[in-house]
Length: 373
Image (tube, rainbow, N blue to C red; front, top):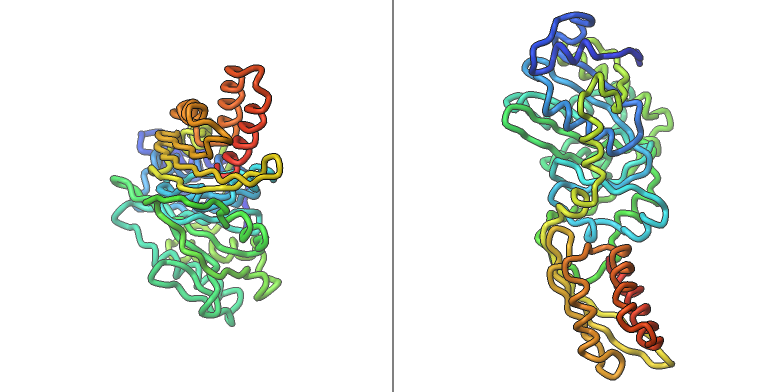
């Protein structure tokens, strides 16, 4: 059952700093169940960080439900070029986010429920949380065959993944968050989570592919609302708290002081791409020019999302070595992204204002380079 009211006083009772005790004292005494009214991935991830950083969770656990408009979320130590189809995502306006926890890449849309279990560090227990979800699923559909694995996934019918897990453990607080596939667009999930980029070498954490299935495919009565209410009941019973789901607005600075700056940070290029572990690209491609096929080899090292070393090898008759060197030098220090490549190439073209043949070749090369970024 959703109870839309301000939980400011509840949070005041849980915050690390001392504030007057008032308002929903009994509700907040043993914990809270929250649900975001926002479908923005950055705002919802900011709520996770804010609660982790500001709430005293000792004896007062929190369960947080949130859903997002279409977006791809990578783990803290992952490489987005390895994990997803960035070009397609840009074309279709799909947001990319990097979360503060580890784990693999996931696709979010309104058919995917995200659940975050907040506790103190010493109460952190992923398996317990997953068992509460399984209990909730069985309470609404006893025939469901759902099991938690040693990898802390939830598997349906012994083969279909319906939930993946990630976590963040701080000095005193911790959270475990997981997904629950209800009615996610399977075609989009498959398409966006398939990287087309070749020749990437990286030590970043790699996602483990799995066959997935929506719970709604198993039983059409298992809607997101039904599932969230069931999990809330299971969670509340275990922790002996009120099962009401309290709606919150992640942009409310009176409830979450400073949260907008957290959401803004999560949207920056420096966080999403710049935090990618160092990697290299070693690839080649063919270009057609005046009815001939020319092979171009590209070697790039990327650190903090920026090009640290670049070497482009092209036949000397097609693009002289000294011109290749100028192009490679221009790339050094620039962001490994299509927009930056276009801007940098346009600037270099101005150094040869009358050489139209060179302009044509550089433009061809630029388009090919953007295809690997």
